Image (cartoon, rainbow, N blue to C red; front, side):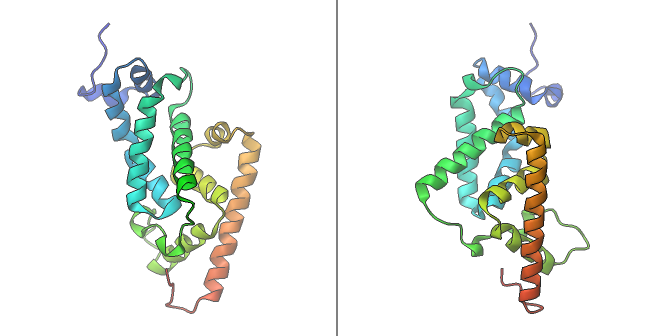
Length: 196
């Protein structure tokens, strides 16, 4: 059987699930393909969640270490992205359980990783960042997965082990809470003083 190699220009056409099956079958060099595809997305997920760039880099490395270490637990037919984000959530939870530190609001994510709409100005982005950091951990994670990481509701439902309808309700409530924090922050702050 002539398997495509990672240096083959067609290797990008290979689905993530197939690449992970190769890793699972001890073709561990294929993990570099998954790293190239997902390291930036994972970094942004962790950074948006915590605001800690160095910690986010460490967590990305930890996720790929765990993907390699637990490669045999990947089940054929499973969505790779869903499985990878479950590993990422576990790595983040383990790290924060060890640290027992609350994320300080001053450590909000840098604007450069947020999607920038040309119409938005610096104040609006700062307020949005601040409002996102005000959300509870579960609401923030849900919005990061669905809005910033692009996971579909059914993927998030599998990840959280709940129904798709429950995910939709939770996302709706998280967006409402985000809007409440954003509006409250907007009304509370004097113009020109975003403080984040």
